Amino acid sequence: MLKKLKRPEIVYIVVPVVCLLFYLGILKVGHHHFDLTAHHNYFRHLADAFLHGRLYIVNPPGDWDLVAYHDKYYIYWPPAPALVYMPLVAIFGVNLPDVLISSFFGMINVWLIMKICSLLAKRFSLALTHKHFAWIGIFWGLGTVHFYMSLNGGVWFVSQILAQTFLFSSVYFLLAKKSKFGSLILSGLFFALTAYTRNHLVFSIFFIFFLYMAMHPKMKFKEWMIRGFVFILPFIICSLLNGWYNYARFGNVLENGLAYHLMNPYFVENFKAYGYFSLHYFPYNFFVEVIRPPVVMLHRPWIKSEPEGFGFIWGSPLFLLLIPAFFLSVKHMVQRKMGDRAARLIKTGSIAATIHIAFVIFTIMGTGWIQFCARYTLDFQFFLVVFLLFSWKDLLVIPYIKLVTAGLIIVSVGIEYIGAFVG
Image 1: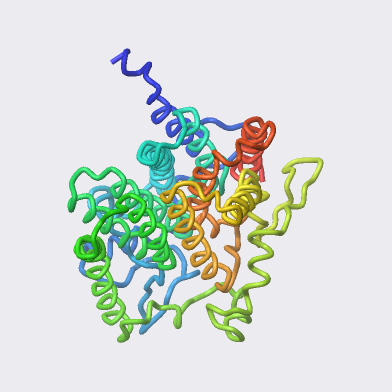
Image 2: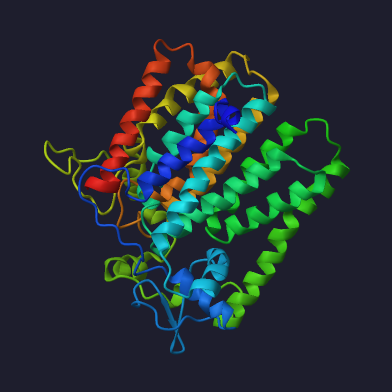
């Protein structure tokens, strides 16, 4: 046992556990009120409803952001997270320590992204070590909005944290490939759960498709069709179940409840004028969630509270490296120094998934209010990390890039620490 603990793989235990200790408020500086049970986590109420053969929830802790239809309360969020809560609610009841649950899955996400990057490096011969994966885990767990979201048990945050768990699990099983069809089925199942936790993450299929192309460059068309069907089958089944779920509640397979949404008055005017999705929101949402800088102060909490949020590249400035990474990729393309085919495919999949997911996010009514930084952007940040991972070799031509990268990660952690504990 002691011999095993000395191996480099120890980072896959230490980094996630350290993140968990931060999520639980054990490693922190300054006062932080730690409330284990979130007042607005409707997933445990929906889990209780499912366990009792109902599709509506009873005795919710308020009606904010619920759906009221025919004198019953429903939720408009996709229902997959409730499946995770069902065994917990069955054993412990509806009053669960939501923050412990979100913190636990936050820790799992850190472990998963480290393992995924390790598998990518191994399969595609990237010159990366366990130290690199440790830095990636630290950045993801403590240097992105994943940090403060893992401290919160509200329905909005749990949805995003679990969506990442499902997405990472899908990619992990695709790469792990324990068996030809078994891994595909598991990957497809977790992809389906991803899509029915955050619907727009269905566009992560672009990344998965190009990744699988890179993994199997010589696969014949017939085999592609067979494996594609195996992968997509769980999604088809979940889509049919979701259609029945909507029809049983609202009499329409396409109605998820937004038409009967009890939204905060803050959104009502825009909803009446433009609806829930509209290109009208795009310029403002893009500005706030990508470009808008935070207001820095010379006293606590150091960053002014902005309920609408600010650009994710300032909350996680490591992503500023995407600028030289992108231009170096374009330069190599122009000069026809394209690198290996697998890297091109995976970068293409990362960009395609990011653009499609971001487009949906930027056309939604609202930026993620109330929040720190830009929490919606977490939905596509994994693909940006992968893009940087496959661009690292190119970035090494920049002087002092290793020192700059370490500094940007440390600054990212500092900023997100403010959002988690100080702000």
